[in-house]
Length: 572
Image (cartoon, rainbow, N blue to C red):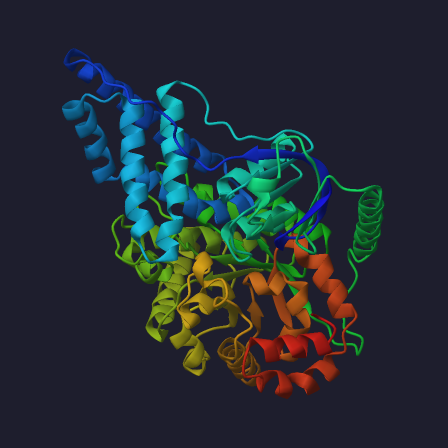
């Protein structure tokens, strides 16, 4: 019988396939005791499994590249921390030593104890961490029996589950999974962002999917509307084929925009830079006609390695990227480790609030020798093309002055050693900290350009974690305070003749393109996958009319008012 279920489209697209059900991670193990003589061997078995699970996490981190490394990193680090949690390890050992439980049953008992604690918490975000606990318990259990903690997925499958972790998405797509439907989730979560990057249709919040859908059922997923159709009718199938044809036509039309100017109807040229984390991103950005690289993330060189990359290793990577862009500017962001992206040799392990802790430029200045190595490598790469340096997490003017002094010093050293270095390397700052955004005028004489990191700026400004599903309704760039602050930064930069781009997630959201143009933004830095669609919106926009409509946008008192403005400009 045909049934239509409703959810929320988090990554657009359409799919027709077979349902593959993944039940929530619940460890079903019978109670089992061992003899006192068997305790040492059972402890060894448990710790072998723990070591294997830790190694699995390290291997996964090393294999990650590009957007997956950026977005899945938080979850991998969280799972690695759980594997090293002293209380978890102590209690597992005690259950085996004192209760003579098997390692399997000890895992079940400890999991259920922690689940009870999580369930009593009032904080929805902390409650949601039970999924992470179950995920890692499942990995340990698989290694106890020397089998892979395999992901369910095959060609033509549509995965149905409670939730999906970013670390799983690329693996599932490689197995042939064509769409994912989950009972929970947030459209602003790392998983949703990564799904959009992978062009994998994702529907979240389909609360009855696990109860109504069985393995092997035929489904249509329409992630544009958020609908899941079980046992589709002939009319549904005709509609699905029509949508696929329309999507194919739209893709062909977008491909015609390769190399076309990003120019508005009234003749204003808009700069479209690309964000990049890998050489593949750089190559695609070049092919799509990006003006340059507006944000090259250097973290992937440091993550998943037991040692820090030396100057020569970093230099070769930066030089090759500069050469790949063939004279177009390349903006290299210095190391932005911390919070969700840690490194054993640099970042502290036990910060109470890592999102507000030693990260970005704070971490670099705390390790000046390592920072100088990176600055030397970037400065050497500047001899091969147009290089700009972008500093993350600036919170005060003094930090930028310190970076300028260090850059000047290493450049002089390199020249004395016989290396070629550009005569001038533009230095810019990320605008992520609200205090710096408010006092941006104080930076104007010490920066050459600015880049607004809206992902962090919005969550700091609204005091709302973007990965917390309970705050999904609060975390949004469509807040009057966010728009007024963006407008302030953009206007101040223009008044002082300083280029400013937005490099956060909203820069690549076509739904918000006209809103950003209305605020005066003329430089976007976005993922290559979004470049052509944003270019299409720009080419169909009249900048003069949008700027004239900006006062009404800035007068909006709530999200509904901003959405009405978007609707009036054809973007809702």
